Amino acid sequence: MQVPLLDLKAQYKSIKTEIDQALQTVLNETAFAGGPFVARFEEAFAAFCECRHAVGVGSGTDALWMALIAAGVGPGHEVITVPDTFIATAEAITFCGAQPVFVDVEESTCNMDPNKLEEAITERTKAIIPVHLFGQPANMDPIMEIARRHGLIVIEDACQAHGALYKGKKAGSIGDAGCFSFYPGKNLGAYGEAGAVVTNDDSLAEKMRMFRDHGQARKYEHSMIGWNARMDGIQGAVLSVKLNHLEEWNNARRRHAGLYGELLRNIEQIVLPTEADYARHIYHIYAIRVKDRDKLISRLAEHQIFCGIHYPVPLHRQKAYESLAVPAGSLPVAEQCASEFVSLPMYPELKEEQIEHVYETIKSLML
Ligand SMILES: *Cc1c(COP(=O)(O)O)cnc(C)c1O
Image (tube, rainbow, N blue to C red):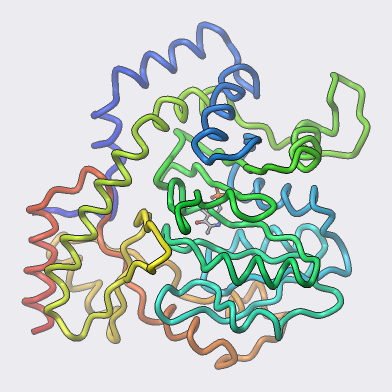
């Protein structure tokens, strides 16, 4: 039995009629760059996130970058984030001319440790980017409390957390802005590149709408220097169809995580992901932790079970960020987690037999 890490074809098959029809409509209307299909999706996604605004952009990376620019982050500023994330979180900071500052994560969630946050704040700190890693929100209440006390902006990296909840509130709706990626493999994935920023701040939304379209509110009237970071019409149409299925898909992921947990908890060499009391985890990634992961991953691949690693090297240990000179061992929890993560196959269409097969195979390899 083959078990891929994810299966986008299975999902397309399940919604083919709706998608094909939506794509045909965009082709008939030739509304390809921005336009009505993007606007319709923005409205639906803002409502889904329980926010006043959603601004569709070209990618999750664009979303983070634009949110920071609109919030006034620039040269001379520091932005605090975590090292266990995709590099885009830090790139967005760097491409504003600011400097990323990394704080360590909590052992239980592998998300930003609020207890480490305050000591990282300096007079240059302008913003904080908590990342909702794997689909579980960071502990936002203490993060927001510290941010407000120091007058800092909070931009949530919710690129893996479409529909996740923190104390009943939607991920992305808690900080000053929330950034989403619709990269094809995300829980809400486009058929190409796309992203969005959600916010309740009218002036932030207005700036981002201008910025993504060359700083113009009306054609060729450029009141600020912007960029081209528009979302495609095709992506808007695809995402509008898929948004209607997101809750059912997230619930399927949660059921799969429940079954994985029930089975794998018998294997003592494995640290299972846990759901914090405050959270509804939507399991974009189901990451277990094991000591000898490379051996496990290659032996599972021999059995046609394909795993991933999100992410093998924490950002402060990447060559791209060697100029920050953050030494190995200085963010010990993040480094430990990164060296042990193994992402097991996880997608809504995964079958119970496949999960049982993954468990039986791991058991035969480890016990
Ligand atoms: C996917 C992702 C991004 C970047 O999104 P893109 O759409 O690929 O640009 C940023 N942060 C995190 C945590 C992500 O998972």
